[in-house]
Image 1 (cartoon, rainbow, N blue to C red):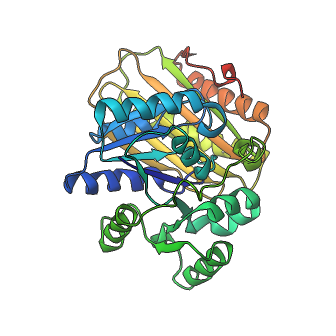
Image 2: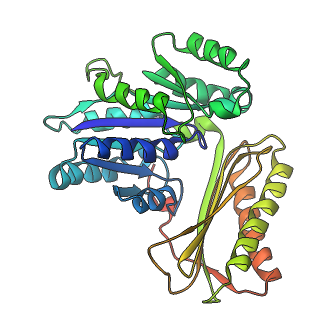
Length: 352
């Protein structure tokens, strides 16, 4: 089994890359399993990946490296013993240090496993803001990597690309640097996929041991996180109403978060499942226009459910929690629809 860890800050395009990578590998007769680590109490990206037919186990409640060592061990060994994939892809939360996750897997002492090169995705369209808002954390993710992917090249001016690449190279001169747009299934993406499968990763002896202080990635990132699921009282929602509610929540939340930090980075994701459809909205920074998508789902919930995940740089968690809850509750109140918080697993119940 080859273990591939793909890291990168929130909103860097990891999930999109993993979807395309899983499809590419499956088409080339590899058995693929994926572990997704989400922030907080609920999971979002695991649902998306599962809908594409990949065997997915989702870990929720924080950061693998600081709070889920037992769960990670159980998940990896279960997949290893029962599913026996050719390739195991691990997507850490965007506020984890990927090198630490690989160390944890290495310490499991499983037979017949090898590591692919450690990959860090960089959102090239936000590189300047990343270096300003979360410089130390972003540098650490870059320095640890063996392959650095400058992603979202379709959103970057061509004259800016060499500047970004030079800055990344100075931080990590030993890594392979690849430019691509992960949402495009083109020759650049296939070259990237081939490289990470064929090139060996660092041997276990080279991977450094990291202290607990060094792996406190959440503290290092200065990112407050909060996620919650809400159950909606109205069983049958019209599609236009559900879409309007979702948009209103995200746009209102964006305005409120800007008041807390005018130049915030992070990730705000909302999934609103109703009937047999889902509204999906995502944004990654203060200057983003939220991306809205309505997709069909294979299941129909008894009651509509809204899942929201927020991770915002340089704000207090209590402020973020209050802001999210207030925005969601106020918007549903405006539509005269009752909601209640779902009784989900609490991140705070973990010992760190």
